[in-house]
Length: 105
Image 1 (tube, rainbow, N blue to C red):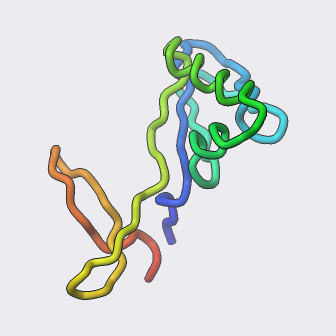
Image 2: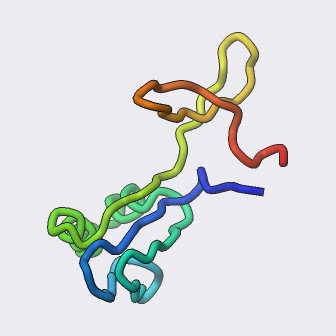
């Protein structure tokens, strides 16, 4: 079963092994080109904190090119005709709804 639509995936693009203090409870060491999955929406989680230090560290890592967000949690909407949930995806520049990945596997 694949529930990757529930996670944020980040990738170390710094060119070196690096520690990202805002990942995990005490920071995460990632080799160059390694990825790390965070449950939920990393940007919303860090941005909603009273202490903005970790959010600013994420922002700096993105601006400096040390980290990229490869994937963020899916957006789910209900089809008004069928009343079924749909996951929003982009395929070759076209935005569309598909059945949520992994929910019925």
